[in-house]
Length: 265
Image 1 (cartoon, rainbow, N blue to C red):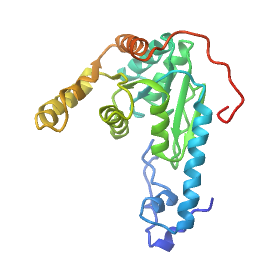
Image 2 (cartoon, rainbow, N blue to C red):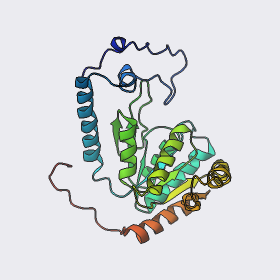
Image 3 (cartoon, rainbow, N blue to C red):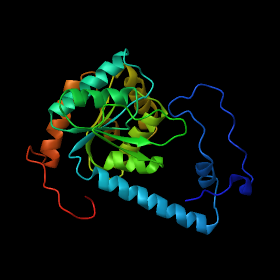
Image 4 (cartoon, rainbow, N blue to C red):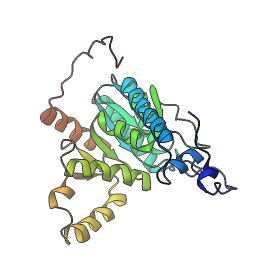
């Protein structure tokens, strides 16, 4: 689909980027700048609706058979020699041994670590990657990945197929994903799935802020904080997720369902 010309709407050109490209740091494309700059002509908006619908359908078809997943959030910036990477790798392996498919954003850093641990333990590993200018390729520890143009569609997929959510240390993207899940649970839009934060040294200051400010001023309830389980042990996190998934949601070990030939195949 041809993108509208940004010059037609008086938009400035993206600034020149002389720095080394980093994950998630590239300037947005002109198409997305136009999309997020306000109302456009109705023909362009209609075409974009079809593009969004097509992207949702592609995600549903690709991910329909991935099995019960646990989604792992985490920074793309931690390298293989960082202790958090080792923690993410161990987490992926523990979740795979429990029978879960490990789903991440498909990128490097702690996403790669979780995917790698799952693959090395003989489990399944899935990535939901986001298309960005000059972005690095999806990590190499994926059985399957789906690329998305729109962040909001990607976040739907990361939530839709998972029975638990784990946040490793991360930045704005990780916080965005974590708090969206917390909000969906708080508002009853999804069930009370386990939410585990791994790395107490990283997460306890955030928990303290929520307790001392948000809870103290009445903007959240004590149960909202209690849902966020903090631990330093990937094995403990996986055991908690496995127990809650089986007790609360009726998951059992069984043969995978036989594929049927219909729309989502």
